[in-house]
Amino acid sequence: MFDVLVYLYETYWRPDACPDHAQLTRKLTAVGFENDEIQEALSWLDGLAAAGETFQGEQGADSLRVYAPAEIEHLGEASVGFISFLESAGVLPGPMREMVVDRAMAIPGAPLDLEDLKIIVLMVFWSLGEEPDALILDELFVAPEDRLIH
Image 1 (cartoon, rainbow, N blue to C red):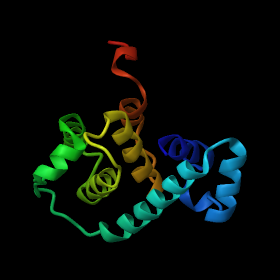
Image 2: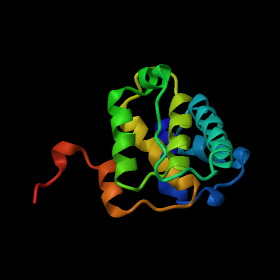
Image 3: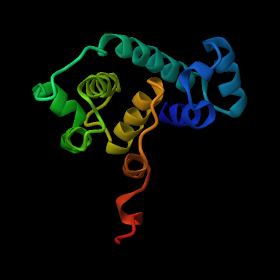
Image 4: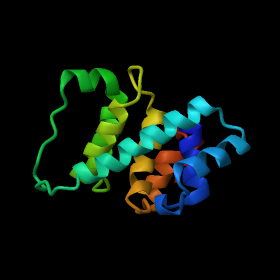
């Protein structure tokens, strides 16, 4: 499923540029994705759109997110830490954080792989039509061992 999401991000750049589900399914099949993987990704994207409508309320700047034990178990410590890092850097406001948590909880298996969480974060930005700044893109795409120390 994550390969389909990355393909959509790289190909369409905006969610409103994507064709309807039927046409998109044909295109993704032609590219070589399996039908199960396509349907899982499209269903996940539908949930992302619904989360975007649900979590667009305002939260105070001093609000605190307390994770439920089930969320910590499902997300894993590395993912919770990464979400906290993005929040503290000021690039993941409360409503977007809630979208990330919601969509991460929709992924089967625990704990969630940190690389998968990074794709989820990227897709939340994409779904809202926002471009993450260059430093955040670096965090999302460049493996720590490949970073140059200045």
